[in-house]
Amino acid sequence: MPDVPAKKPHLLTRIVKTAAKTLVASLAVIFLLLYFLQNKLLFYPSRGLGLPPKLQVPAVERVEFNSLDDTRLVSWWLPPKPGRPTVLFFQGNAGNIEDRSDRLLDCQERGWGLLLLGYRGYGESAGSPDEDGINRDARAALEWLRKRTDVEQKKLVYYGESLGCAFATELAVAEPPACLVLEAPFKSLRAIASVHYWWLPTSLLVRGKLDNLGNAPKLKCPLFVAHGTRDEVVPFEHGKAVFDAAPQPKTFYELKSRHNDISEFGGKEYRAAVASFIEGAVK
Image (cartoon, rainbow, N blue to C red; front, side, top):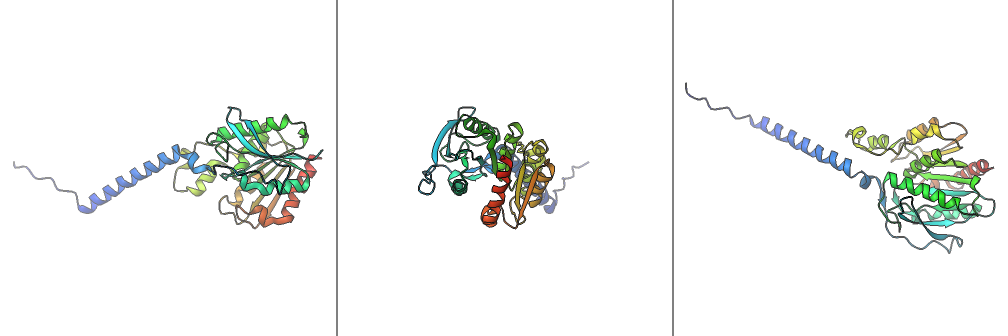
């Protein structure tokens, strides 16, 4: 019986199969990049650091200390007036502490101390940023403050913005402060990743925790949460969920701001509300 030549696949079938293979390969590459380059997608540090703004804030100092793994950290320090609170500030994921110099002005006006913590890999701090490393930096910053005789330990305040909320909250669970202030907190790293990468299996790919929602019920200090209803980075409902999960006493401050303009949008009224909360908590 003569051989019958095999029929060649229809052109459309070949195109569909090729496209499917290309799509699978592309997704595999994206999955691998997201899994192994998460720190690059999460942290956007600015290297280099200018001089502290001594003209506007004469008492501010450039300070250096080591993290728990001996990574050298460079931060800015404003000593408190006698008997006044001290704020340990955790910045968001972009820029460095130089971009937060306005916080120095606010604290100077009220006589508060302020440590603008320079995360590893940010500004002039050594190393590269990652979740575990910055949590070590937070512990080291607290230890540095505890060694200072001009800091009243019962009047320590943790203050986080955006990504920094997770590090402030993590530290607050382990070492409760007088109070905790959070601006635009997200539920968790996986939850916020699912917002921005909704088309990927983020529950499988995201390795970090940064779990504000999980830590909120464990808090043992007064909590102040501020969030903008027009936030384009962290949905408003994330901040509200974190707030709802925390025990009393707590205060929620709603603004019509976007993600990066909470303090600017809220103006003096917002800053006065934060100050009133902190002053009440440290008493």
